[in-house]
Length: 366
Image (cartoon, rainbow, N blue to C red; front, side):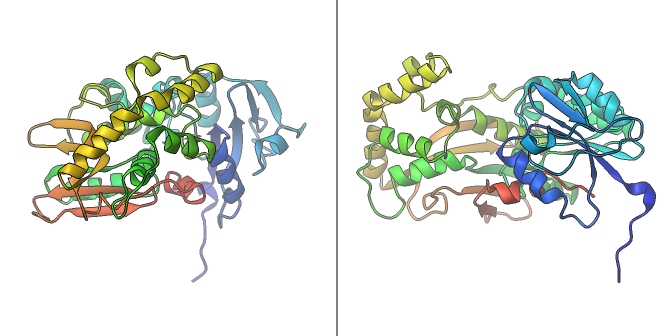
């Protein structure tokens, strides 16, 4: 049967953040059977938008450098969130804000959009892992404005972690424990440092340096190694299953960044200094690997949530050799223990972040 689409169901889209994922997203939007109308595209210092109130012509589905050249669009500097919310909410149909950034200020403004009926789609973890009050306000504002919040990609990348957890809770199951590896970068580094099968003579610092060179870390590798991004993901999981976690830094998080190096500035010079000094601390990770080997186990960086006790922790762990977590190298895994599944967890595993997949995982536009 041929698909039909009601005239009044047109979707109007605003996108903030046009990096690697954002540009890949733009390239694929027009392939939808009924593509949305892109009426706003913004970066940190510049915004292009469709002229209101006609919202025509629309912003083309093109990479940023091409879109900003079109004179028929409205060109402006960075706009405050309240102004963007007012613009999107004036569109004659369903409006959605896609936040491709990691900006906390924008995340704190989500309620402004949601109260006006503008739905939010985002991989930005900040709004869902900072103060519990903001988390609650986001969802209460969505209910007030009859809007939706999609943040599936904030945990696990392309893995359906949050939707699975919500389905389990909605169908009456009781989640008792969640554990796993939710950092592709740390999964890759530890998998190369101490393979589940075989051995490695590579130093910790050399592996970090190589991962940075090939783009498998953040520009500042400390943002991966300090565990805080991992902690944000566990905070989101805990809240989705009904736990009251005040903040992402309210529970133990083991950093793999030496204290002295954590105080270096995040400037280019500071990052370069960090990379230069890191080899001095290789002995710390070597000792952890030796101890794991002595116990017949494998060294991994994991996180866990014990729902019954309320305990949440992130850090290095010695795991059983031959286990799924021990055999990881670059992929992510989540083990979900529930009353229904008993001693055998529901396991989600895969390569969490793939750009061509990720934009669709967090953006169900229809």
